[in-house]
Length: 233
Image 1 (tube, one colour):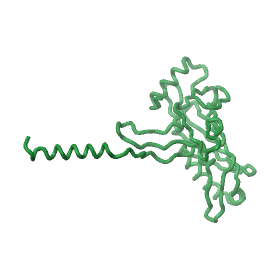
Image 2 (cartoon, rainbow, N blue to C red):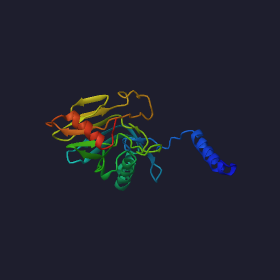
Image 3 (cartoon, helix red, strand yellow):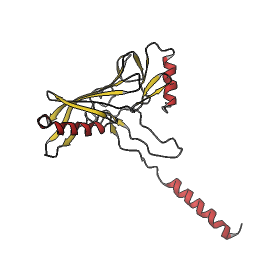
Image 4 (cartoon, rainbow, N blue to C red):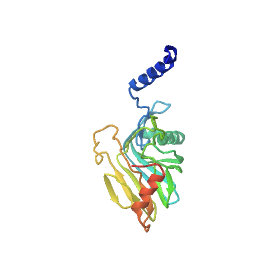
């Protein structure tokens, strides 16, 4: 091969070598709280801090594929400011709910004593598959293409108690460190082993699957449903 013909080949080899030598960069998005209301810590336009203390989130997965969310956070600061201004309370609650893993719709906020109670729904948080309903937000999405980094960030608990429960007539298939019964899965910072962490990591590998209580082969159907929605673990 003539020397001039070697130049493109040498250039190609140098590019490949440089690409291999570059260390891998984690291009995923930052971690996301499961419950944005439970992670509330912000200052209002008037300068009043609004801070959540002890908190909980309950998500109900319904047979029609819809989900309803109920967040409750005891306020260690800001309760008086939210009580005095309904518009401010609604704005703070809507923004906080959107900071979590849900895409909140029809947000309704109220005060129950010193607690901020926020209810909303997310029509896209679950997928119907082979007669089941798969709740997907707990498992971050990753790129499907090979050698492509990025995707959603991990999840952290934020709430002192997270409950995912099945709607009427349904059972719930999945794994959680504290499970009350066949219709719900429960996570707490202590149960997941991160009781002292500021942001307890929620390492969920398998999507919870709601399935009718009288369904045949529920375990097999849950496994197939997860595969069909892209949860392959």
